[in-house]
Length: 250
Image (cartoon, rainbow, N blue to C red; front, side):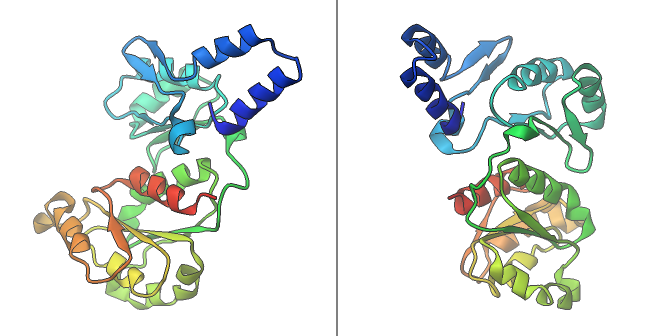
């Protein structure tokens, strides 16, 4: 349930195409819906501007099928994050209108409900290395399904500093920038030093032993001396996309 759907519902009532009882019945189901072990939050888009998105990592394929079949009937984009290829195969065998994106590990559907004309500009997603692509693709798909134009700069880490410096004009035109890096996590500090756009750093669990599964990159980003940089959790491309959505939304 989004603002456009609600406005249309009330317009139908105003025009006499729906009666009061039908409208009340629809609104009665607005806050949420419970079934099995799941409670769908139909009101989330109206409250926050961000639709309900399914975290799929610990859900069974049966649970995902139940949730996704219901969500496909609603006026909203459908996204499920952190879905393994094995579970995705089982889901796609049972639901024809769901697509799997193996790099991002995401299931998507209802592209026709992607909002239009909702963005103030373009979000740029930058990665330090190609090993950071799964997190970048999660952020990219999320933003695209939220209705934002996205431009990417991949494999532009500080070991070859010219690669990111060559793209400064692109960074300076962005409304928001997501920078994804593992190892020591230095790239967001560099990017925040060359653009006035808000920069969202995403530490990844890429690196050798003392990288400690992304903690070194996380601490490096949190201790950045570049202003205008905020940091989300390790490998959290989805969270970075939600922050960029809030910044870039009209």
